Image (cartoon, rainbow, N blue to C red; front, side):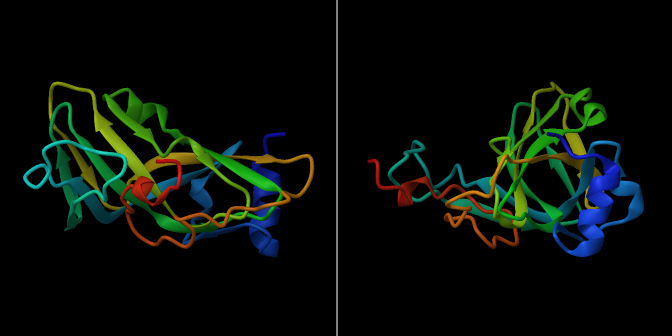
Amino acid sequence: MILSDTTLRKMLQSGELLVEPITPEQIQPASIDLRLSDHFLKVNENTLEVIRLDTEMQYEELHQREIVIPPHSFLLATTREYIRLPNDLTAFVEGRSSIGRIGLFIQNAGWVDPGFEGTITLELYNANRLPIRLQEGRRICQLVFARMDQVADRPYQGKYQFQQRATGSRIAQEGDR
């Protein structure tokens, strides 16, 4: 079941759900808008010949209030908000329609597991032929929350737990090589 603004406000007020910092305007009828932080990662193309799943990625770290994403380029960003989900709640990361209509695709694998705590790393792709300028603090995506039928037996405790900035891929740490 998708949670309503009324339920989200109650959960935020009780502390059952944490989204900080937050303003009342961010709470939408069936979602919470999240804003862009000032921390970004860009694949360091000068140090890599090819991207491999079994090798640690090299990134260039950027801290800036504005960033330009060139056409057909990829960038990691993070949300300003730190979230904590209870063990019976999951969330879907969705791009905002107004952002998608300018050709900016926003993803984070689309899913936040129950029990996750941290900021959300966003994968941004400019599908347009023109550069796109983004500003820190701008509403960039939304979280849609769904209540699970029961508490997760194994809530999220993965390699991205407690992240507080844009976090690059850690796929090289996985054991299925």
